[in-house]
Length: 522
Image (tube, rainbow, N blue to C red; front, side, top):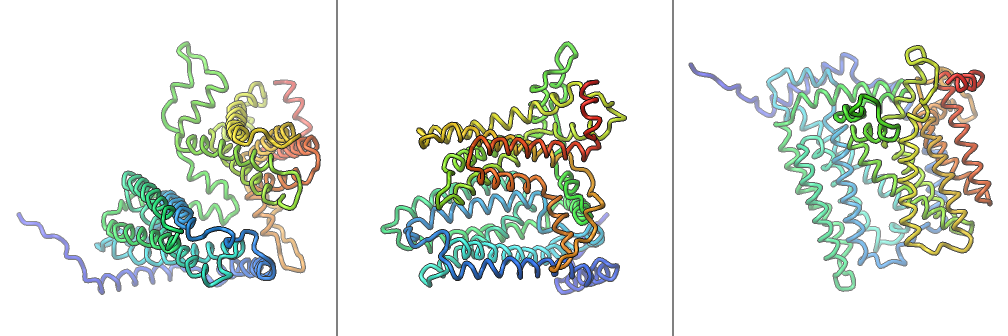
């Protein structure tokens, strides 16, 4: 008995067949309509006219916030760019594991998978086009940020090396994005370790060069060589890609896109939450009783080790940045610099507070499904909130303590105010997290038009509702920074947190009128 292998079609025939499939899919209604493109174009035009153009004009007529002329750019370019390239490479790999460049419409992928074409024929063109888009967007974003924040492009002597560096980093971001999706976890770990080790070596060599000569060109060459070394193996892995996993990723991405377009962005993000695994029996003692509230929260956090590890990193780092900004704030011409540290630390603590465990979701479910769980509070708030409150407070103050040790003694009269402001920021962050996690479906009244001389701005209300936690944190930090007294700022943070808790309870259907009676019955 003899078997015959299917003969691979020539490249020209495969290209024509793929094009025919895509044209057939487009005629089914898969192609974007003119009306679908009009609204994003309208938003981009509003952003360009009312924000980007004034900012660029203000930057062109005023000195840059950060001047690179006062720094030896050649000597410090290699370590700085190597660190940035490592961060971009690792970030691209991580994003590729969840939403890579090969994610397409599920039906189109199903049709192409049902043919005898190799995945390289119909995925190669998609990968090249999307990597070109990603590299271009990254290049424009990095160049825009460098132009607005520094004077890197004000002189020809620094503009050309800066453009070369940004081009190399953009190429690294694109190929790492593809590598993270098509290669296995082991290969991604090997690449991450190799990139980190190479960056340390190159940074050390570039920093010890005589007078930092050619340091900026070395910093531009290394990312380009990294992209050239990683790109071809990533494309060679296309024929052996796991199509079943790609189909699941495409289906999940399609569902998340539908959720995001219909206004429920938190439901879209929930699709990418890892499923809790293991340690289920650890919630119960040997005598059959449940463990304490803190132990329950810790065990549930360990059931999602990736999120717990991210929280364990973000909370101390955010606490350190928060404490550093609070300790240096106090007015003066550089108040905005310390405010950025303060705001960045608060955002880091806010993100870590959501990844510290799954007890937030359990609290929301118990509050929104009162007929199932009953309306008696009992130990519900303590059971659900004990672990996140303790973990967030401990992680934040651990990072703050490390900063205090390095900066000790603090400026005269700043020790007590620093503690008050850090504590107030933590309370504000917990209130904002409670407001975020109690979010349900998009309220219908947000879709009503808001007519202004600049057009319908109802989309801004929807965006503010989607990112209400970030809005509360950044606005609260700005208001606290504007209050001259640390005690007044802490009281303001407490009031804002109480308002967030009240708004979160209203989202779950718990009215103020029945709240105290329910607490009394509990």
